Image (cartoon, rainbow, N blue to C red; front, side, top):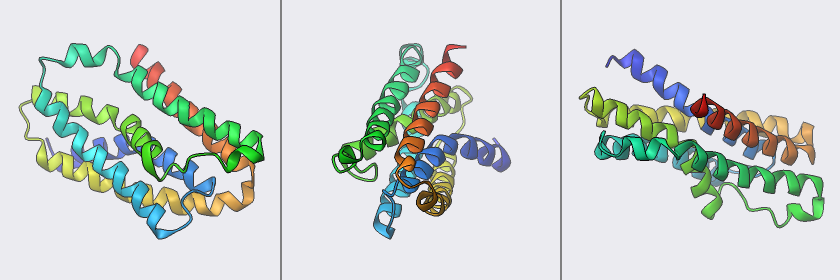
Length: 185
């Protein structure tokens, strides 16, 4: 596998994390360096670890994982999306909305956006390609792309106001639907 191929795969895998980071920042949840670090680090880390897990699992369990991985990603993204939309529609609910850059919400989003990376790991195992170098590149690129998305989301957030929560939730829902449709077709 060439370096260019790894870059293309990394950028493609990072698009879900990009969308989530953009939405979180636009909704006002990534307003400081710590939140930026948490989001970009976790998304990058999960994108780097999942191919290693997929590679470790190898082809023996791939048929079992492939049956439901897209449903898991859809449900996790859908849950967070519905909570964000609800918070945007009811401003009083915004104070109860979980910060997507913290706690279990961050873990759920990191997992949901990196499920495809697990499949890449399975593919690398099938191709008999070492996983460490591609996994590191995938993680670093995802981290960088998330930092750029957060910067863009911060600029968009003030223009969107309270609608940023709704827009962010809709983006997450669309990402979840895309994952589901892609895997079902």
